[in-house]
Image (cartoon, rainbow, N blue to C red):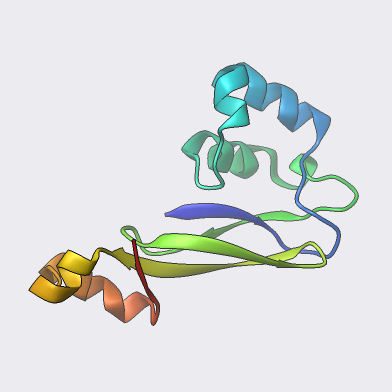
Length: 113
């Protein structure tokens, strides 16, 4: 899965031109609910390149393994992403599926829902 993060000190943000394009493509509601892995957002960054940024942001696409959830951590605007496996108590007590077991090679973190 592709995820957009800010890779410089300052803060996550994008240009007015990018805002207008996202509003056009997603609509007001979609724009308000947009997540960092939204394919439309990711593709816009890939299309616009550096012109998507503000003076205080440098947006980049990072990849995490499909099937993992993620958290974005931030320090002074610089962000990093960590993937984790999300499971239920029932899954833990009954044993994880083969699919979930295979995802453990991509993360060392399991979170219980």
